[in-house]
Image (cartoon, rainbow, N blue to C red; front, side, top):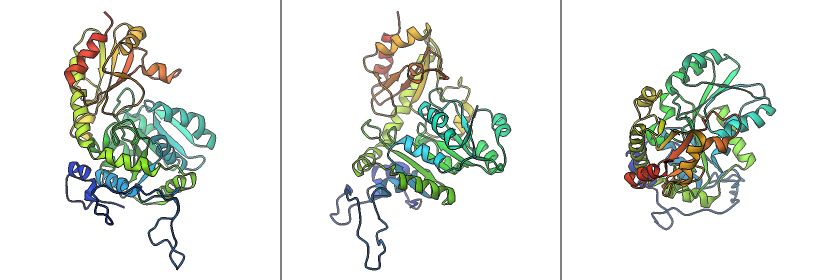
Amino acid sequence: MSSKSYPYTPATALAQALGKIDQESQGVVLPIHVATTYIRGKDNSYPTGNIYSRADNPTYKPVEELLCQLEQGHQALLFGSGMAAATAVFQGLRPGDHVLAPKVMYWALRNWLLNFATDWGLVIEFIDMTQLSEVSKALQPGKTKLVWLETPGNPMWTISDIAEISALAKGAGAFVAVDSTCATPLLTQPLTIGADIVMHSATKYLNGHSDVIAGALITKHDNDYWQRIRAVRAQGGAVPSPHDAAQLLRGMRTMHLRVRESCANAMFLAQQLEQHPQIIEVLYPGLPSFSGHDVATKQMHGGFGGMFSIRVQGGEQAAVHLAANTKLWKRATSLGGVESLIEHRASVEGAGTPCPPDLLRLSAGIEDKDELLADILQALPK
């Protein structure tokens, strides 16, 4: 499935969806295949490779090939959601396997690991992935089977050193999987610097229009572990609808433009707000003051992402007041869309959250940057 031979830049690959056209009609937009089952050949084989749409569908292929091109991977799989993709990585393991995961990570996946994965016999250990010494200490050669990274880490935007952690993990015989949703394939390609699998919640920046739920995994190698993950998708039916896959491909064709604008807006806003007396702290990898800036500079290219968080003077009440009084920034969960979103994460995540109560998570969209800044400033408690 790899499309690494495509001879053009990521921007061109995205805009032209690898240049694919419908061979039957010569249409520049590919058709949506809604069939659930496929004809066998006279020799009882499946000449097209398609068997049943719970396992696969021709509409997925262009998206998967495009993701392989962007991530420089061997093979990709679409899933019905980012959570379906992420959990498949853990379901491909076996009872008793030891897993390292970051303390700061997507809250829904952390809860799933605590409430479901442990019941299946996985041993989950949460550590500070920003500290290589902690990773080295926690690895158990022969027992640790997976190191799960999320970088930047939602919602504190912590940065993990993919190359260094991958080297440590390989020495212990463990696979490395990276949730690179917020970095996108345009800013970081984890497979090229040591990771084995990269995961994206395609709902976010890949689609970019807040109207599709989907996920994706891309692997560097085809091996027994990857085949188990493929089986999890096929046997569990964790696939998107053909319509969602087609909508996702359409969204991806402008991803390079959207991500560029979101990164520029986030950087501008972070720089401006860092100087404001009512903002205690701005958490953004692009700021030299941010603790993970040096590592981010090493492994993120073309921008530092569209996500940042702010801590508001006056505590939780002031933070909630700010979010409640914005006009352009929409108070909603999720991220990576064309519209800017703001959310008080501690309220969402509840007990046990690593988020300070004064923290707001912001997803910078593609609106006018000065208007976005003015909206935040007018919403600050007077």
